[in-house]
Length: 351
Ligand SMILES: Cc1ncc(COP(=O)(O)O)c(C=O)c1O
Image 1 (tube, rainbow, N blue to C red):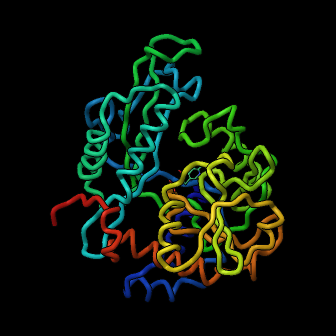
Image 2 (image 1 turned 180 degrees about the vertical axis):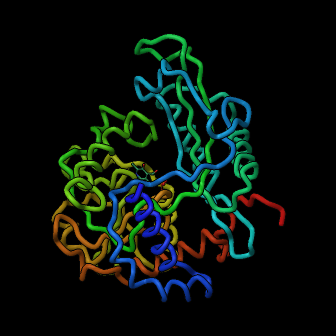
């Protein structure tokens, strides 16, 4: 409990340091020096309860959102999910970031399992927006999940009922730090012929949990996983970029990564800022010698600098200039400050 509170405090202070409004910036300057003094509790992210969860066709109270212990998804990891965020925008409104792409990916994930989600994409988008409105939230994390339910227990899932829920809650940035110390995990990403890494399937995340637990127990902030060939793949829940001589590189889809939507956003923003961006196989030694490196992901929010990998400083071990530019562009885009990318925002309330 104590650890959770400290972590919450740390993430709140961290958010202030990346704050963009003048009022927030003033508070940020005042508190910035406290950041380094608050210990990290290793990725525990307490969930702040909302009032309602949308589950199987209706809103239920948060504590009533229950399922059967014999659901297929609980036993065999046969579920698919998304992680999306809504942000308060500069005009005081609120918008979901890249809802369209997240819902498309949810349906692609379901296809990997040959699962039929009981609604179409349009309806899922409506349910998500409605769940946020019902909980009167302006800024939140959004977790839709479809999973095979209870009927039979065998390794075939075809014909089983599919449950569907959407939960939303206020959630701080997942990594909760200005920059992270990462370690390459001994757990490699699933071999693409053992598991469809492009799909957000619940069972696949055991791989990510193993890597995460391993390096966090050893005192690092986040894991980096290699693919089955030994090239850098990604973090347990984030994609990865490096900067070398002002050029950005990120592992290709063939490196067993999830096709991240933040990754795509950063590739577009960086190119629009005039940088060359490549998808390239990255060896661990190339990562050690990069000028800058950063993680991207919806849960982590703003691209997060990697200060160290395997106890080797990346660049000078601080947030690099290109990472900073991308962070600031990304923050402006999600808050609706850049008209050019307005089509990525789905506004929630009329006001
Ligand atoms: C394994 C993995 N890689 C990368 C990401 C980042 O993807 P996105 O930017 O779409 O959140 C996630 C998060 O969904 C993930 O789970």
